[in-house]
Length: 284
Image 1 (cartoon, rainbow, N blue to C red):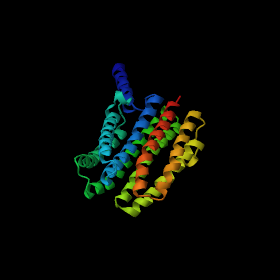
Image 2: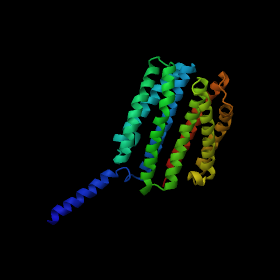
Image 3: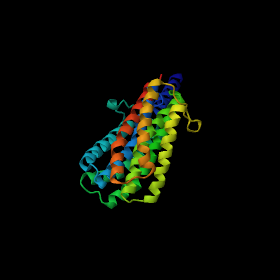
Image 4: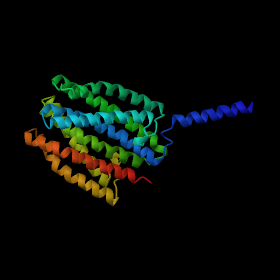
């Protein structure tokens, strides 16, 4: 009788191992998962921004090309989070609750992608723009929920402070695009007052988090950093932010304001992404 019992015990242990497959990942792997899952949040806003830039006639063809690349990357990463993707360094997710959440994201993405496809085929009328305005935040919020679940699951392998730091540093990437999207929604005459209010909140959150990444912020769960390489990179981000913030704070939707937004938002995103990678690299 002892052999069947032993077999049951082994089966149960294997089942637990599969159920918490991502949790058993190394610190570096969990850092990568949180980073790329977090990056998905940014991509929801980057796609929305690119659609609005096309609609506003700002570098329309270039932004169509960018939109296709962004959509393809979002799709590839979402599938990679679910099934694993060696080229992205993503292990397969085994946790049932996270998989259920990613299924919700997949459904929302299917609906949102219709807008992407419409714009790529030349349709960026008001109906499409209103759909983008309506659908982008549920996609963002549900992707963010998945990120929080990954961060919580990482507790056994990654220090909570580092998980929070990578999560919120990664969220900054999203905020660079969300701010620009909100400015462009105002410029396109969509829910103007609501988007002005949202823009002000996003600006405040970006600034607060940037300071917290450097100096620490207990209410955000950020310990701050003394890493010279990271501090130098965050200083680059700060300088770009100092240049961009006046456009956003004044909700400057003039041609000059939108041109400046189009010019600065990507360097701000790229340099914030460099900071995230440095935080990830610092994991020991």
